[in-house]
Image (cartoon, rainbow over all chains, first blue to last red; front, side, top):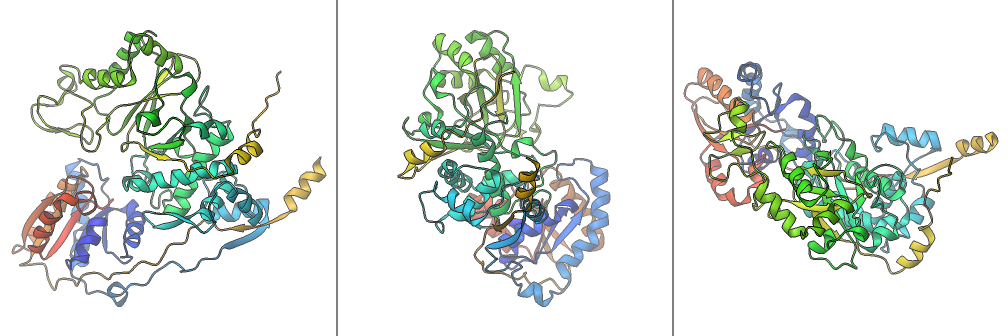
Length: 447
Length: 109
């Protein structure tokens, strides 16, 4: 829709075909760019469809509307639109019991469907103690709605998610990460159901009890569970990306609830991810990826040869976007014992992950000319069999994270833009905060 | 034990809004519409969605049938949005826009 808004702004009337289920998304996009009255042509074509007969029938059915959109005189509202949002929305919005508050927030579309902690003045004030910044400080304006991510608004969503105040500095860094690449908004709204994966590095990960070992991305730890959840609520309530309104993910993705891990720096033979990206070891960072998929494999064998063979043999040619290999400390240790650095592992993967000879012909596809490899048009060049190639969008196309417990399973994260890494700015009283909240951990009774 | 739960459930909470404020942004109206299509030069903007070229092919058939004096000029984006993701082509895109009377775009999802 952004092109239609741009073109209308240049004085040219525009008719944009929009799949009928995306009409709300289109109108929200237009409102966010200052044109809430954009005219669209709803149609019945899935945007990735290649079914010519279906498309021709749908266009024939919609064509009268194309003519109307381009020629029907404008209404006064279309000539001079008015904003639909109140300029100063209420700060306190509801009073009720726990159940009533939850029902109210849910019915307003402000939760992820799970119950929330009521964001009272008292709870938000406690959350703000972790920020080290005044409540009104503007951290970022988040696209597409350009909602103001103030420290207080971040804290409200953090309370709802169940965060502790020690998570606030990391949430603020997370908000910076969302704003660092405009593609993040597109990822959160995409039909591809990309889900944010957050990797936490540095001493703050341990201070705030982010799990790096067994079940690093599974439920059960307050930091991993609530950090991603809060970022999801921020995406909904500050960015304004809501399911089937702006977020048009077709299959959806459970990672959108919370997908967070700390890197297992203590047990990795290599430098931590944030150090690879130019940060100091004693600094703390959050890194953001938007993978679509999480794949786990048992290596052919647990020596370096078997681990690398499993990686290069398990990547499918139709993959797209960023790529990260998840190695347990044991897998990383086997590679290091074999003389592999993190960089040499990455170089090996890039060089040796190729489309097998005759692969496309076996699938009945003609690869003698440029063709569509599941959204990626592959030219008939000498490099066409390379699956990972450095490009301006992906200057570093393979990443390696060491996380999880001691074991042999390994994994891939795939999809979305290059990871973004943002330094966490800790408040001056961080040590006291850590002391206060460090012991908020589960104690499991043995049976 | 049960009495305590009843007390918690009946306690009331006044809650802050999680929904962010957004500064008002300048609002813009639509461009004036055409008085007719026939005889006009219509730009077809085709983005990287797979259905886009097929939709525009079908549109061209319809438009030529209904308005024989229409001429069509196509611009192919390399992404979902030439104006926001292909800044290096802004000049080329603007030059193309100057040469058309209206635009039909596919696909706006």
